[in-house]
Image (cartoon, rainbow, N blue to C red; front, side):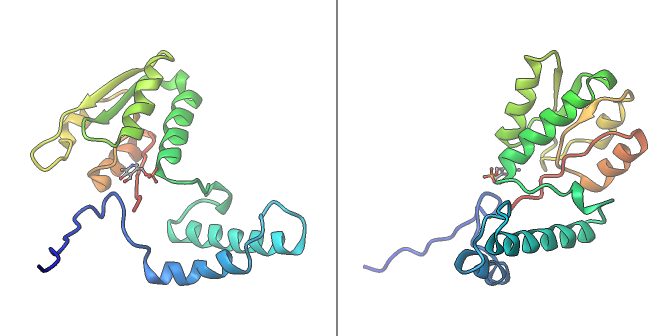
Length: 172
Ligand SMILES: Cc1ncc(COP(=O)(O)O)c(C=O)c1O
């Protein structure tokens, strides 16, 4: 009996490491594996590599400065940090959290957690393609905090005009 062919269609949740990434990372798993906070040579070697990576990412996304790039263990930690951090830091500017009804649980749970701290959640419905209608977003005129990943471009423009924050979950 032949083995059934497996078709994997969940690259949005997990995928093999891109070979060029694996190749670039290998030296730091095998030889330069020091803790970048250590003062000894091995640690400082790792620190140099880390800072170089930070600089390259900052350049790639046109960040104001490389110190603004923060590495985390993954998207769940990033979402928690970004959503709770931005909301709390800007509580005096608004307490309404706007997101969509199809976000990852790490977004949903971070927003729900904030309701225990005096924030109000608005989960916007999506169309058959999973997109929030941009006109719905335009209805929100005040300075609410928006946490959504879709229609990145048009949402980006709205956010910029209103000096709001955009959480782009470009994971995987
Ligand atoms: C949109 C989104 N947010 C968060 C996560 C969680 O990522 P992690 O497993 O790195 O915490 C995923 C994982 O698939 C995701 O697709």
